[in-house]
Length: 115
Image 1: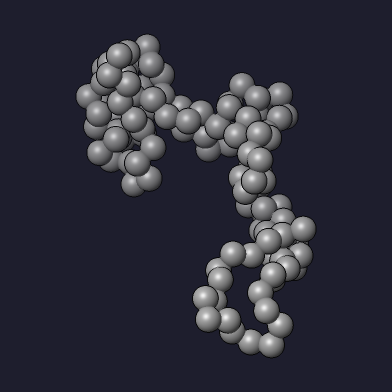
Image 2: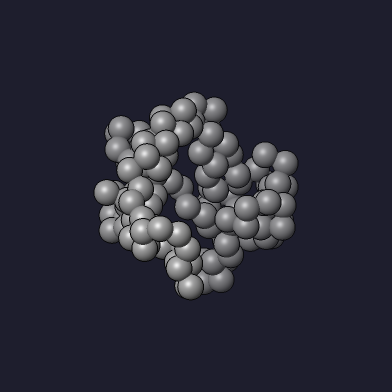
């Protein structure tokens, strides 16, 4: 990737996961400036950049990232885009409103629940 002058950042061809090699990183923070998502963060103690690895060690074993499995709200998803689109459509179809029957309320709540 062009965002690292020393080549510490790589994007895996097989799945697109972006990783930072902390042994190569010089802590210049150029990747933080260049990243449109704001993911690389500077670790002042180690003087290197860090970011989520999407639990690449779990992904290689066919498992989902730990954040997906441990999210108590079940709002995190991981997988192929087409599979996730189908999952989102299914969840939208299961939404249930707890609002009043017959129109808008004075507070017009935005909270919705899924089964």
